[in-house]
Image 1 (cartoon, rainbow, N blue to C red):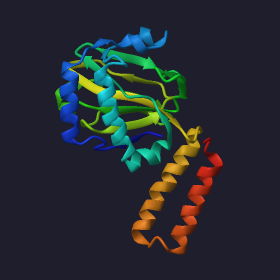
Image 2: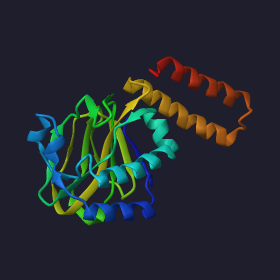
Image 3: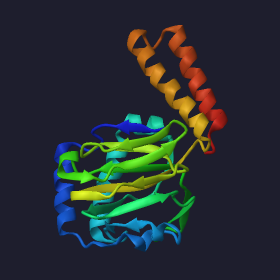
Length: 227
């Protein structure tokens, strides 16, 4: 399931994030890549433990916490601290699958990477190329979103970032361990929740159909969650 969520960060939040990144230290992105991914990864990123990464990570986490669409799509149990990368002209990330388990620095916690997320911090007009290409059962999905928008997709997907040919592509990237491990069950719950929201807009919350659907949603979540 691939879900694009608009305006996770507002324009007023993107601008100061970009300002912090302009002054931040940047290192080779291979520093956090696995052995196989390092052979495919050609980008720059802000060091995980830097003050800039921590400051901006808090902004992203607060934005996720207030966004009901992200909660509905990801059903988050744990979110890996957001990281920040940059693709300048000539940089790319060839096809790869993200590591199944990530170790959270300084916390002694591991998370299972059920879901990958990219939060775009550059508008499409600022660079050419740089599309996030995700392979799924329906073929390749090419994603290039406005600054502040988020794409959520299964971490099991083979994906790549196309070469940037002009400008610079900046983004935040991170992973989520979901309360519901199974991708198909997560998709069913997401579609159920979207339909329930539309039903509530038509009927009152006290309507017997709304109450029954709400109960069914939560009972399915109770059955499938690993909390």
